Length: 296
Length: 316
Image 1: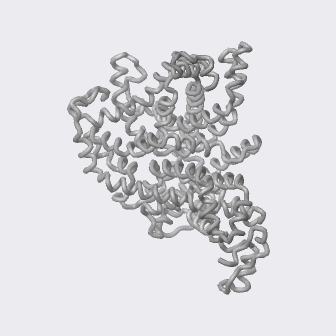
Image 2: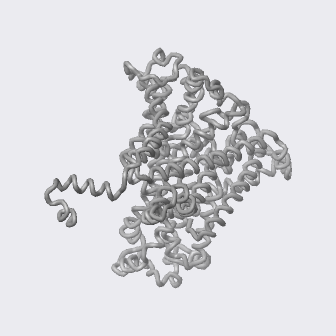
Image 3: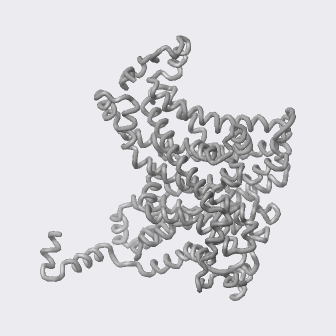
């Protein structure tokens, strides 16, 4: 600021500052900007297509490509899809699974990781860590057949069972993330809290958990995206089609959608929009959270 | 809670209260010689993990040596399921398709993500906006995205290709058993690229811009800069991405279901889909043997991953 005032005291200072910043950053590469803009169409065009299809009547689609602009706008598809697939119920099921999975993954894995890291000098805890890491090598398809039977046998062939399995399959990765983070927190803090009379639970709740907020956000974002968009587990675990999540509902209604693609696209759009809005609002969080998780 | 130990006293702490018998107390001391609070933190995780993942895993391995069909009586048949699986064309084809798909999609995803990361890190206009656009596919459901692309690839593109007389796309590539896998590669990469892109961008941010300024002053061309500086510095991130994307592509399921349903015929039936057929076709034990084979392959890649990461001294 000081240099700017001394070099351009008479000119409008804001324009001067901006020009100086531009010069320091170098020239904008317009050629590359155009290339990137063209490539971005690969992402944007399918999204436009989904919106355009959802806002058209079957007559407007006709036998065309579906890319034509939806005019006049036909809102009725959303109403039809909403009623046909019972969107509110499917939405609630997706939300239920996601909320349980996000909370559960953060709590179960942060507790386990903290207990393990703070007792690392006992072989028992090192062994526990190694044992939990086994899950890194077990993808769902490998255990699916016995697992589906097991969930049905104990009455968990429902969204709760799906949420529990989401927590379990992510346990290894989450414990890994949390324990790497906890190792960076000095134990002296916790010791002084104990001297002040905190029990182990209180230390966890009042001191450790708040300190874990950044990595808990990372775990939570991964959990949210995975649980909300998962198709494989709810499809196979949940026995009653009524309690299915948004993605599975799209699958179950495929046969009925083939008679009216526009209703189908309205339904797809309603399934996509919640995460899209959540992402656009919390973009900075999501991206930095994923960066933190991937570099650890 | 008054007996909660200070961290320095872990080993000396004895279990409190009479709930544990003397022998039990000794056992507990052998296995978990710490304050009970820590046990309450760790034991639920161990118990749930054992019950929900390890127990079905062991059970599945057990069934793979039997002729169990999911209900009724059964007896041991030794390795017969495995022998049959190795000579079963359906299973062999599913591995062929899955591995080919995973390798090609992995290369495509990483190549595109790396180029995009470099472009999005350069001095372009509306950089933040473009980044947002390219991140979007990451948050969308793979199945729903597949349904959207089914219509675009199957209906819209053939019409457009017909108008401009571009023969290869004039018919639905998803309906052709030789080209359907290309559609799956495209959509799976479309969904997977943002995740890899974020990791590459994180890598690029860690390279100081002074390095490039010095290189341009020394007269290094853009290609030379990429070859000698960017790529070597990005290499660790390239390894992470390759491993992550390859592992998730091996489990491909929802994109196959959404785009082709495994068809035409069984041309794009992935390993996961083949295993799940054990629910319906009376092949329960047989597909468990397939699952165990799949597990061994996954394990092989996972161990390879660990050795690579250990070699570069990472923590993951």
